[in-house]
Image 1: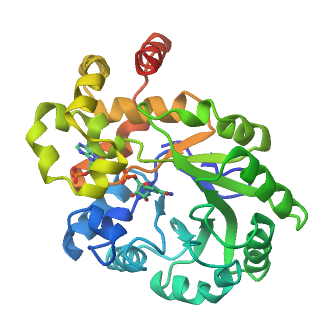
Image 2 (image 1 turned 60 degrees about the vertical axis):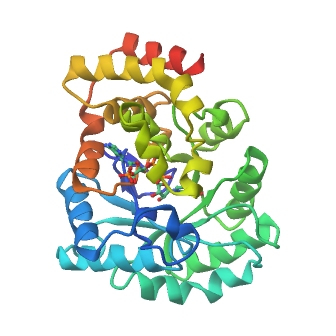
Length: 319
Ligand SMILES: NC(=O)c1ccc[n+]([C@@H]2O[C@H](COP(=O)([O-])OP(=O)(O)OC[C@H]3O[C@@H](n4cnc5c(N)ncnc54)[C@H](OP(=O)(O)O)[C@@H]3O)[C@@H](O)[C@H]2O)c1
């Protein structure tokens, strides 16, 4: 998998990373969005991702209050992955907190991640009590102290992203990334200025829920009964409903036809579209509950969709 630069940093990442929210083991409210994966299953998912060529992992404090970070580190250790051999992205949880807690929680982040250093530290959402500039000042201090290598934000609007960029620039640091929801069913960043601003500033867009939590794999279209087994949080977040399945069926059928022509899967076509349509600006972090899903995701960038296929997918998704 050909690597790309994370923003204007010297960190190189594959166009597909592995989302690790799925490793939360139900340890808090957010963690209950997914079925609990036993340690052995997590190890196998991480192993499949690495074997497929994925070189980075996205986790967060809020995924099980650090459980996802711990389980990721345990899996990497069990697989004998050397510290620094993979890129680790995690996030500070800002809700009901001031910027000061970025530095007061960093020891906990590093202890959860064990031997693995934090490459990218992100502000998870724009809901801190403190202004963006104060948050970036704390992040800059961590970077200058060598605790993290790069700074990112998540779910930031174009205006907030610019503010974060400007505040970091005053400290001689680049804003590496903005992690936002982007997939074939949710393309708001193409209209609300986020994508345009990211391109202008050289900021990487890290697309979360790139498979619309499974809708863009066709699995719910093939087996609508599976919807009942999905958690409430997942159904709400991805608007998983019979109406959504009906509305998206033509797109799924088109993805299926293209996948067949390439000997690939629907999810691979969706991921491939996502990481090529906007050049190198967008990378994606699909989550996986099984090794085969991580394997499929890792192979998605090998697909070579034609220009005609890419534009057919684009126009069908728009309609
Ligand atoms: N920054 C933020 O605010 C934010 C928000 C959400 C997520 N994220 C990050 O983004 C990552 C990915 O987003 P996400 O987990 O919401 O959604 P996603 O990647 O769109 O969907 C992942 C889920 O889809 C199913 N799946 C994956 N590959 C599949 C395949 N090949 N065939 C069939 N089903 C497949 C699996 O669920 P089942 O096997 O259970 O069906 C998997 O857990 C997270 O892990 C997290 O790191 C960040």
